[in-house]
Image 1 (cartoon, helix red, strand yellow):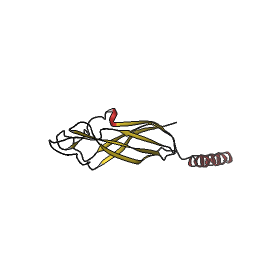
Image 2 (spheres, rainbow, N blue to C red; image 1 turned 180 degrees about the vertical axis):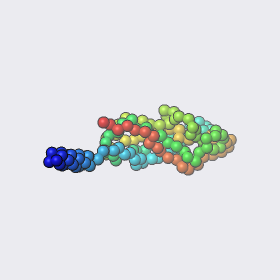
Image 3 (cartoon, rainbow, N blue to C red; image 1 turned 90 degrees about the horizontal axis):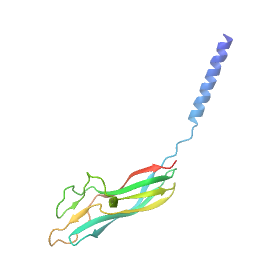
Length: 148
């Protein structure tokens, strides 16, 4: 009986020690990226076509370094239909290389610039002047990997 009591006491003490060790485990470090600056510019491609380009800056406010950060832009108010006299984009197809930027590496606390073209396109109607910028333009961080 005495041996059983000592064994039970030993198991209880070990259980408490394991719970303490597990609860004291350090918090995992995480990556967090934010877009601190974004600017969209209207560029005339040809006599009758315009496009929107983007540039800006990303800051790594997380605890770990990141790599292969992919950034692209979207015009949420543009139509997916191709036509004359309206802003258009192709939301259902993969982005072309010029429509995104890949940043190789951003250390924790660091910042990097990005730029890409062709967020949206516009084909002029005959006699029409320069179009107004569309609404609902945004830059999006599509993906990134953390550095081990």
